[in-house]
Image (cartoon, rainbow, N blue to C red; front, side, top):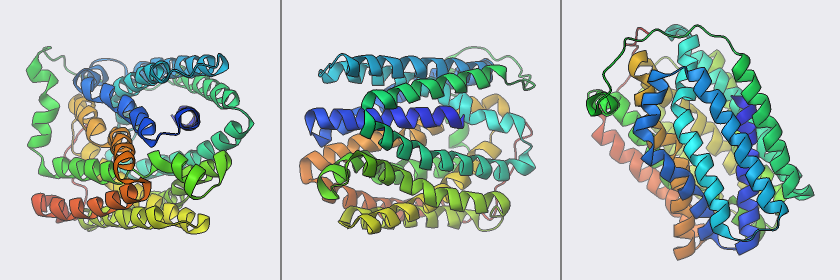
Length: 388
């Protein structure tokens, strides 16, 4: 998983930088995010069905192969000197479709190989490793882009290939699931289940809007090029900074996961995320910007681990793919939708007001969710009702 994630990070960073250098339009950065988000919205239902019906290992393996092909296509476009934005967005749309179809299977896979009692530790350990790669991925991507965009896409191809081979060789006992009739009722069962569990619905809603309005990441090329004046290598540092804080905190959480007042801690993490976003948006000093991003990443990983724990530990395995698919639309893909929101807002009101306003909106959302979902606010621990 982690190796493939690094490849996607490098490819996304490279295409974002390349497009901004071609057009110098923040709105085009938002289009990249929107193009990644739209397939996830359209494919949410079939992706959950795929994760629950087929071998999740095989689904993820095929996805890595598609990622490799997309990186190769982007490499070809750059090598040929193509400047037409729609061609780049078409490849991004394919990549977004693959991520949409494969993400529920990938996110559900960990729970298939880890006991419920150890899931929070395992999830935090995985998050720690993911954030370490997120530190190295953008930093490596920035250095490769400084050499050439072609070098970045080539590295992405190699990493996707390694990940595909690793998954293909992985042997894990497959969960035996009772067959279900293929109908709209079955397909939409994930939504119905979420509505019956306010804690799950609240956790997903909080993640959606916190990330949606706090999407400063999409505008980092603008900060690197025109506000902080640090170039592509500096862009890599900015993209890596949140992962530094996340990795440190995730390593701590993996050893000492929170066992009490997890609901309030989830909301506090969203508030910290919003405050750090505001500081980053206002900063014109590189070190202050990096510090704010480190704090942002620390709060983000705590909230992410807890809210993912609420979902995964309270959902039966037979339905986990469909619930995770909805969660992916509401949370993970909100990164892409948040990128579109940030790019659009930056084009309308300016980059700094867009980021600062997003941080303020995150604080407001946290307050509203606390009122709408009191069961999440009052949750003392991660209730385990899943006997996967």
